[in-house]
Amino acid sequence: MDLLFLEKALLALFCAIILAVIVSRLRSKRFKLPPSPIPVPVFGNWLQVGDDLNHRNLTAFAKKLGDIFLLRMGQRNLVVVSSPDLAKEVLHTQGVEFGSRTRNVVFDIFTGKGQDMVFTVYGEHWRKMRRIMTVPFFTNKVVQQYRHGWEDEIGRVVDDVMKNPKASTVGIVLRKRLQLMMYNNMYRIMFDRRFENEEDPLFVKLRALNGERSRLAQSFEYNYGDFIPILRPFLRGYLKICKEVKERRLQLFKDYFLDERKKLASTKSSDTNELKCAIDHILDAQHKGEINEDNVLYIVENINVAAIETTLWSIEWGIAELVNHPEIQEKLRNELDAVLGRGVQITEPDTHKLPYLQAVIKETLRLRMAIPLLVPHMNLHDAKLGGYDVLAESKVLVNAWWLANNPAQWKNPEEFRPERFLEEESKVEANGNDFRYLPFGVGRRSCPGIILALPILGITLGRLVQNFELLPPPGQSRLDTSEKGGQFSLHILKHSTIVAKPRVF
Ligand code: HEM
Image 1 (cartoon, protein in one colour):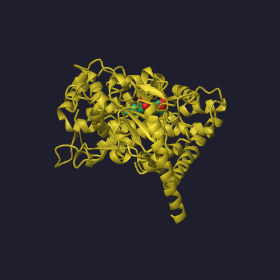
Image 2 (image 1 turned 90 degrees about the horizontal axis):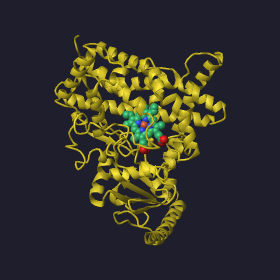
Image 3 (image 1 turned 180 degrees about the vertical axis):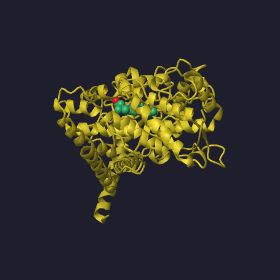
Image 4 (image 1 turned 30 degrees about the vertical axis):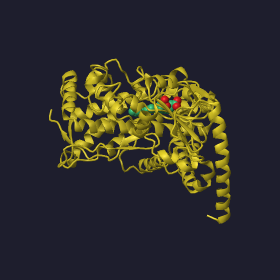
């Protein structure tokens, strides 16, 4: 770094401090802001609270500061909401006011400044994208069209595990095979394509680029440049890598999937009765001029990010809890045997007849919420919340994990006990009918993928428990369920080795 640049940066920092002090004095007089630790100029609360604002750390702040509090992360205002009433206010009552998304310098790159659906502000573009995506992805018709494909995919997982002698002795990292299954579940919907095995070169490339994108976006490494804009030049190297990954990834989607599909479509007659896959519908919207090719690519990008890993993490957590609670695993197996008959393989319509399986899924999503703070919301204009002022463009986090794990609201929430959803919480559904339980959010920006995620979870966990006894590896009495969080994800820290002993029918 050259000296002139450093000098300029220091001067700018000094001016920013003075300006920030003046602005902050003026603003706090005009507004009634939510409780907050005492901020220092420029850095706000950042140095006190650190980077890792995960659901547990934010819960600790809520206990000190209350159900709504403000953290000033450099120039960014972060408002955290931790009660069902305030969650209702943000997601439902004032759903329009708080229905936008914040992006940061990195998300701006990966989403082309909000040309996608997940990270765009609430408005015309979001409405159009959500409408265009609904028919090809988010209806019961899609579930009925693709459920045989999902049943086939988990069937292949079961066969592969059966064939692998290690699985029943030293154990295998089951997640790796399930990851291929989740890619196939979603790529069948999107492109009517599947990958034959974990070594398929295209799958290897795709998984690596998606992994890089996740790592770069979820990292806390770039926070300083986001919180304190004058430090942004120091992020140049990081942002360059982000741009390269983004370009290589979108190019891969285009060359190997989109263009291939277009070629195939051009060889068929237009009045063909063959079933369309999702991208055909999306390309129709492009041809009608509703969206452009970049939007099409960002839809593919969004599905890769929003659908595959979230569902995979939840499957992984579900398996880990079933291994660590053999009595619950046994009870689930008994339900499957009793309702379906021993050895009769579970299909999607069966999942509705299996209340204990549903309860296991709900309990997994409660205790191990994959997106514990939802995807950050944002208010475009100054707003009021819980009697406080929320300044325009604040990042608003709903601590959904705490809502579902607060002992004042739930009986022994730290216990993995699916029975709660058949007993005292029997009316609570995953679709947001109770503001204490929002694993998919609720309201305008809630997860449209719930309609696919729940049956996939049911078929996958059901088949595994029907066909195997799932155990920790030799010499271990239980699996390590330490958590790893990112900017807004929660997954298991160590991908566990699991012994899968085939059942004899
Ligand atoms: C167990 C699996 C999943 C979980 C736990 C999950 C959870 C969530 C959550 C918490 C949100 C944000 C809600 C909010 O901000 O209020 C979200 C948004 C979203 N999810 Fe999911 N999701 C899952 C699977 C899926 C799948 C399978 C798809 C697609 C096929 C999907 C597509 C989306 C999209 C497009 C959004 C953005 C909606 C918007 O901004 O309007 N998700 N998801």
